Length: 214
Image: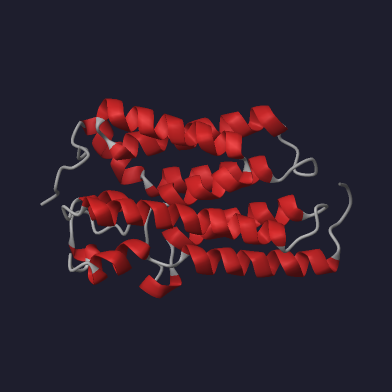
């Protein structure tokens, strides 16, 4: 596809970005821990609303549910964008919805723009956007996390690997496909949200999986 996007496509992209952001903003970790009687997740461990911090409550069931639902909202945002758009422009709306869902999770309007780090939502979105890329990301994340027992190390490795994978698949031409650009932006956002984790990993003080923070 070449040339300027039609006006109606730009409006549709804006609508899909809003939809993706709204879905991404739903704080499932906070909702589940409150409903499950585990307390306000923002006052536990790191205060993060993601599955890793939910695990620090000792509720593995809630952590698993948070992981699944956070991934599902990213996947669903991309799926809705594809269904709502003609094949000529579906890659554009889906890519934007994927990025918006991760932004929503990291900066949710419902929590004063103080959210999570985007790992599960990013993986879910990229699984829908480029299944091969998403599957490689999941494999890297699980493998590194299992070896190191550090969830953030697995996440960092996954979001370094995925832009490389999708570039190998599609190249880097926005006109050819916006997927690599969306993947790169999502990865940069997730990596930026982990800046404190990166420092702790380098110092050897990062928490291990299952370890409770004081």
